[in-house]
Image 1 (cartoon, helix red, strand yellow):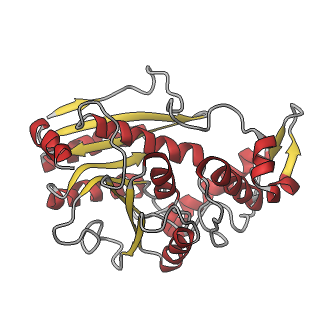
Image 2 (cartoon, helix red, strand yellow):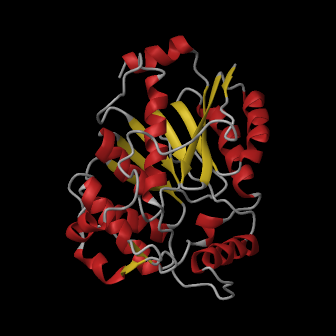
Length: 319
């Protein structure tokens, strides 16, 4: 087993070179792409145009503008109080796993619909499939336990011609099951991705939301803002990020030949060692750890495969 680990404290991490969201947002372009954003634009303390990031509607309109400008997504919506993700960071995950596929493809970026990706917990926002389809032409299956989120994800797909036929949303009825009933008999995926719930309890998630709001407003906030942060299943699960990641790892063993590369986002570096131990127990052949950063936030993608280098190459040649 190989283990390619980059120490986040040593390696300088920044947005992926192919990420379209380098530097500050260009609000002139965003206003042109999405006039609905204009009422939410303010001047910050440096006299630069920005938005109030503690205002959920402003954040939602910013996402709509980014999706229109960079990904040709004309119609996008999420229900009240559901997760509105930061698009630059989500794009980085997709670009990093695209690089991961090059390891099994003679160093070439694989493009087109024959590359199939499973997004575990796709969410109402459907962001990962949108970026993957628009940047690389891949096809996606998104799994979701929340039926309302699944319905909105389906609507986001159906409302944008470039996504139709490229993204399929499947509902998972049992929250303890990751792959079963989602991966169908004889079906294979080149990638699986996941942004697991971060917190270990509802109280912990609420406290985290309060801290985030307080940081954004530069003062202590004691009341949760409606439509900020996400639903409970998006924010927390028993055991938090580590337990969810370990569940993916242990359940992936039963689908060792159904997916070329499994992966999950890990926000906490302290969770890596426990995940490495779990990967050793299930017999992962190759492990890759890919650092990512957006602003001051450092995270990483943990990826693994059960296939040897020879079988990886054979897999991609058969594509």
